[in-house]
Amino acid sequence: MNFIKPYRDFSLFLAARFPYKVQKISVNAGFTCPNRDGSKGRGGCTYCNNRSFSPGYGKPQKTVSEQMADGLRFFSRKYPEMKYLAYFQSYTNTYETLDVLIAKYEEALAFPGVVGLVVSTRPDCMPDALLDYFEKLSKKTFVLIEYGVESTLNKTLERINRQHTFEDSSEAIIKTAACGIPVGAHVILGLPGETYDDLLNHAAELSKLPLTTLKLHQLQIIRGTAMAKEFELLSESFYIFELNEYVDLCVDFAERLNPDFFIERFASQSPKELLVAPDWGLKNYELTEKIIKRFIERNTVQGRLWP
Image (cartoon, rainbow, N blue to C red; front, side):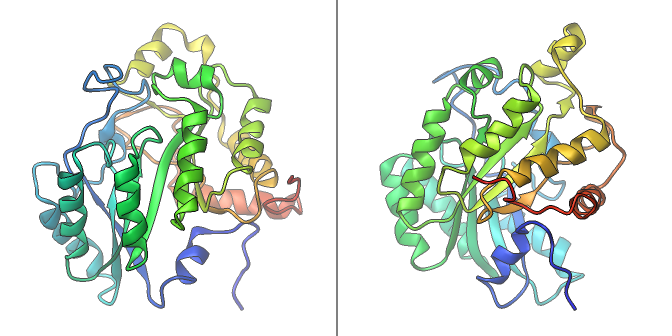
């Protein structure tokens, strides 16, 4: 008998769409961001060091096909019948000319065993012409667009140098969903200046949007970032969650979340050599197990307090 999780797990979303196992292969296509190249700002988001979430098998100096081949070799040893989603992950993956972008996506989709595309980007970097392309593509193959929302508070977005607003996020999500494309969002829990009530209100605000998937990330202080310098100088302006506090926060958050959303993850995991705080000493799956246990202990489920 299969255990039914107290929240809508991302694996349910994939199982409803594919009759076989699928795995994302991360691609670094060599793009940049508008708040790095000067068109909106410099220095990037204060929390961001791209090395903290780019896997070892994907190197930007390699072509898309070479990275896909590396990823397939990495995963196919254990699951030879696996199919793959090309995951354009690093930096802003819709921030280039249309011709360059489409060429990169089509190269990935042409790779043997690839059955779809996942594109991570900023909500202010989705031109109508590109959205039209994704709408047409989604009628032929699987497409998921993920937007970095990070916070629903504009004062926070300004502080962390996102260079876009929550209204930008809402507009991009609504327009993408209207094209029949599944839409994901990334949110960071614990950004400086946000109260516990602010964090729970993120769930309420996001639940008003036509999202399909959601990724939650605990705030991580990463070496080599502007936020790491801020943390060193003004640590009192940060609240770093203890493990059990964060477990409860995830349950509190999920209780207020639209029960139709699929939660892809509750936390991110950066390389230990880059991580300043918090160092919980757990793998992601171990943290997820603790969160599921807390759901059960509290006899609650995703969406219990929604709307």
